[in-house]
Picture 1 (cartoon, one colour):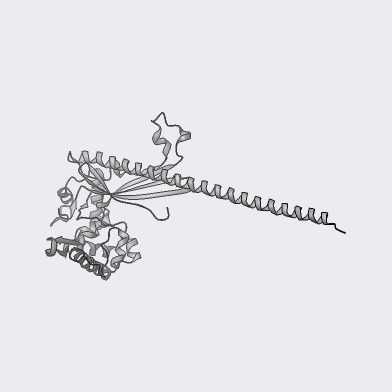
Picture 2 (picture 1 turned 30 degrees about the vertical axis):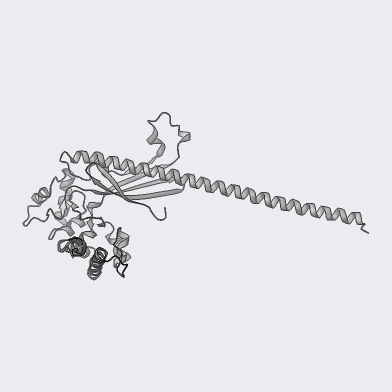
Length: 324
C-alpha cells in the first residue's frame, strides 16, 4: 500500500519532470529565436553589402562611359569595339582589390561580380512614335509617320499582328494627349516607362518577348545608332534595306566604325540614301548597365538606365530584377 509520503514523493517527481520539460522547451525556443535573429541579421548584412557592391559596379560603368565620352570629343563614334561594349565576365570580387595591400582576402566579401553595358540606341525607341508640339493648353500630340513605318516593318519582320501595333499607337497618342492637358485621372493608360509597360497599351506578352531585343523606351526622341544596331533594327528603320545589305553594313562597321550617317550611305551607294539624320546617327546617349553579384547560392542582379550628356552620366532609374 502506498503511504502519504510515497504519494508526495511521486507528485514531487512528476512536478520536477514537468518543470524540467518546461525549462527545456523555453530554452529551445530562446535558442531558436536567437538563431533566427542571427540569420536575419546576416541576411540583412549580406543584402546591404551586395547593394553597396552593385552601386560600386554602377559607378565603375559610369566612369567607363565618361572616359569614352572624352574620345567622342575628338570625333570618335560609339561602336561595339569600345571598352564599354565588352562584358565583364564573372570574377572574384577580391581580384578587384588586389592592388590594395591593406585589404586581406580573409576580410573581403567572398563574392563574384559580372556585368555589361548595352547601347539602348541600338534599338528602336517606341516613344519616338508620338511627338509633342506646342505647350500648355495648345500642346498637341501627333504620330510620327516615319517612325510608324519603321515599327510597321519591324512587326512584319517578326510576324506580329499589325492591328495590335495600330491600337497601341492610338492608345499612346490618346494617353499622352490627356496627360498634357488633363490633370484629373482618366481611363487612359499611364505613360509607359519600360518595355514591360507596353502591355498597358494592349501589346501581348508574346509580342513583348519578340520585341525585347529590338525595342526600347527612352524619355526623349532618339536616333538609331548605325554602329550598334542589329540587322533587324537596321532593316526596320530604312525602307527597302535588304538582309544582305544589312549584313554588309555590320561587316564593314566591324572593320571601321561609321563616323557619320553619310559614311553608311556611301557604302551602300543606293538612291535614295536609306539612312537619314532625323532617324539615324553614330553616337549614343542612353545605355543600360547590368550588374550581377553571386554570393554562394544567392544571385543578386540589378539593371539601370543611364543618360550620358557630354562628360556627365546620370542614372535615370535602377531596379532589382525579379527572381534574383
